[in-house]
Image (cartoon, rainbow, N blue to C red):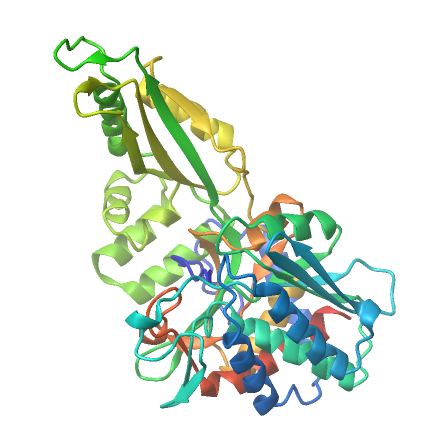
Length: 481
């Protein structure tokens, strides 16, 4: 899932002058000053990977339908292994681990030093696509009108292909990083994330992670870059089950307790409830800057909230806008309901799923307890999905900020860079839980009108390939020193 999210969080590319009042503490100042110093000292790099080679990798990747249930992920992993081995990687540098019908992939460019490795993240699987609904077969890559069409062309095979091509080119160049660089690809990010959890557990000792499935550049409809989003945080995903059980009975003999009615009352309370608004470093820095770009009533509300997160008028305006509501706190919504067992019987059981996107740093149990308090009915049991875990934001490391700034500004000088919080989840979520700071730093720049991830006729612009390769080459050379 390419998570650009509802990002308002911009860092000024021109130093400290655009940081809003109230957040110019010494820690943030040190981040910017250190980033600027590192950027100024960064060397010029060698030529990145060949565009035609990367395009072939992307097309070959699309042609392998890595949808859940088809068992094709190991085939794609083997293909990536063949690309890297042709570039000079040894068999021992590459590990493919089957997990059920899918697999994980790991390829290591060994470092010369003893520091912790850097890991690159991406996923090989894609969501399903019905050829009957598409203009072209979703699993036959087609280059047409300046685009490459096919399922996964954006999410996430574009940046995965760029990372594979870059890793291959670095090996061909004889590049010797000080830190080892390990490319890690999951095989079920779009579904259960079982492979993601396995990778996070195995590589939890990494220094940090760079994720090609988060962040990226936005190009306006006029063709000019507008900003670059650096994903440094994701809201925690958690499902809760509400359950009511009754003895039941014949529908001709109704009683005062009815599982469906009790559940409906509980759902109405949850639906009407609003969690306390919150801020973190990312939203505090970026919201006022994005507010200036958005303008209008919502821009005024964003700026007011940044100054005072208790501003009732600003909160109401932001909550009314689906684009921004997820940025100011935890949200919980009912998504599934089941109840009863026969048309002529009193329901013995009724359940509902509550899907929550929890603000970074808030424990899952805290949200469960709050739901229980909201419902205030002991007959309604609130159960937590056992897979739910909380994730906190990653710190804005000066070295990462410097490297991203350099890579982005090589393509678009002075472009605003936004450290953002995503309302959804990527592989970074589980790496953050494991204690690995993770950053979405995709190389893809695209227009909003070109983004069809998970949708019909998904596509990626051909002219995005060359700058994306330069982007990854720059990041890896700078950050592995």
